[in-house]
Amino acid sequence: MIDQENKNQTAQEFLKGLWDENPVFVAVLGMCPALAVTNTAINSLAMGLATTFVLVSSSLIVSSLKSVIPKQVRITTYIIIIATFVTVVDFALAAFTPAIHKELGAFIALIVVNCLILGRQEAFASKNSVGLSVLDALGMSAGFTFAMLCIGIPREVLGSGSLFNIALFGDSFEPWVVMILPPGGFLMLGFLLLGFNWYSKRKKERAVINEMNI
Amino acid sequence: MDNLLWIFISALLINNFTLAYFLGLCPFLGVTGRLDTAFRLGLANIFVMLITAICAYVLNTWVLVYAPYLRLISFIIVIASSVQFVEMAMKKFSPDLFRALGIFLPLITTNCAILGLALFSTNKGYGFVEGLIYALGAGGGVTLALVLLAGIREETRILNIPDVMKGTALHLIIAGILSMAFMGFAGLFSA
Image (cartoon, rainbow over all chains, first blue to last red; front, side):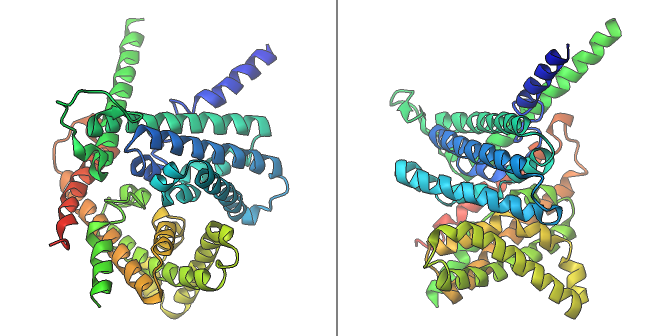
């Protein structure tokens, strides 16, 4: 029984990041990269994976060191840990995939100030065991990557008529260029949030109706 | 001189930090409920950006040539601590200014616009004066975007808006339209 509950809790820590506490759609954290680099699906995926690596590694280190880090300087310590991993990602991407690194440019370095990462360290990794923190980080970054793709895929399809650089439509397709330019990012996320709000509201209303019927 | 003017206008309008680079969105969406708060936040932003430009120049010239891999860590720590230091000095010597900007300073320090400024001006290889002008333009651009959005948000309060539209979704769509308007500045200097 206890084992079952534990398992449920573990699964819960992972799943909450995907939907219920999705960092981008619900908490509206980590907006800068979510809008700046989502003009193609590949960039979105690369950004999502880079953030995943940084978040999971920092959560691992922070939760392992939580008893050693003095409370007064904890935020600074977290930032140093995060900045170290971001530097690793920055150099790794520059070495292995120079093309993507060039397109993402300074936004890789800006993962350091992504409030999502610091937020998870402060809110979760500094209070929970190593295993749970890593799970939480995995769930949150999966949710982040999912949100990045939700913004990136429609932007690329509408803006350049392709997906992962593969052309989808014939020559007659007239690209909606504004979608891959900055305004497209704002508009796409605005409309996605609108859809998200509408869905949650409808779900709530349905629940009320169901309750009344019972 | 032309070059400096170009850097300023480019950072202020064409490559606006908020509307074209998406930097500093958290305060952009969070603190733009009222016009005067937004304006003060913008001023605080200009102030921190000027300090950042000075720190970035000092670090780039004397430290990072020897250890380029320390760039991120040293930028963050040096900028955060200098802002803290200036804040303390300001509290002592100019309490009025401190009251106007005070609460925003620690918030802004970890803002991506600040680190972005340091990184961009390093990537572009700006010197001391160019860096300061760039910071002034970028800060002015952020202030402009904040004030514009806050102004529009104050107006939307008397409108009849559907429930699902209220909040961040509406602000993002307004920002999208603003950003489209700013794209018009792109042809400013090509002529």
